[in-house]
Length: 87
Image (cartoon, rainbow, N blue to C red):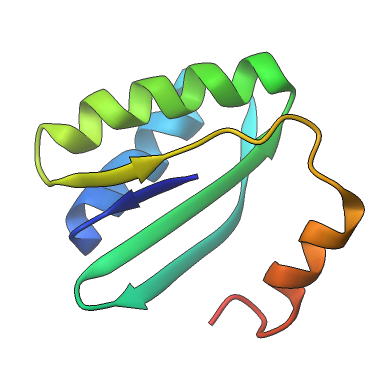
C-alpha cells in the first residue's frame, strides 16, 4: 500500500509498481483531504520491490504519506476492500 497527498502522486506510484514487479492493483482509493491510496497484491518479494520503487517515484512528484507491505494478510482483510467496492 502506498498513500500520497495527490492524485498525480498515486498514479505515479501505481505506474511505478506495475512496471517494477509482477503485481496487480487491488484498490485505488481517494481517501479524502487530498489523500489517495493504491493497494497492490502479488508475491511478497514482488510487492516489496514494487512499494520501494513507488516510494521513490511518487516521492519525486508528491508527498508520500505512508507505504507498507503486509506479508500474507489474513483472509478477513479482504473484507475491508469488498465492503464499499473500493469507493
